View 1 (spheres, one colour):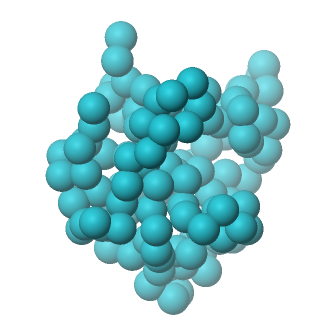
View 2: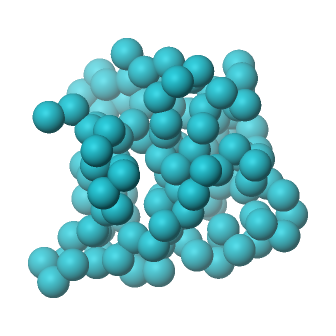
Length: 124
C-alpha cells in the first residue's frame, strides 16, 4: 500500500484552477472535490483509469505530481473504486507540495497522454 511519506501522488486539474492556486499559494480542489469534502488523488497505478472515468475527453488539463510528505495527517488512503485505496486530502493543497505540473493532452484516440514520469511509477 502506498504511504504518505514516500510514494508520489497525482491530481488532474484545469489549467485555470492551477493558475489561481499559484497566485493564492493553495489549491482548494475542483468543484467536485469541494462538494465531496476532499481533494481526489490517484497513485501512479490508478491515474490512467481515473482520467478515463472522471475526465474523459476533457482538454486543458494538467497532471500535478505531488509529494505527500508535507500533507501529513490531512492525507488519508480510503477505499473507493473496486476497494482500492485512494489518497484523499482533507484540506487545501499547498502549492509548495507540488513537484511539477505537466500538460495532459488528448491523443488522437481521445484518451489523455500522460508524461513518462507518471507512468514509470505504475505497477507493471
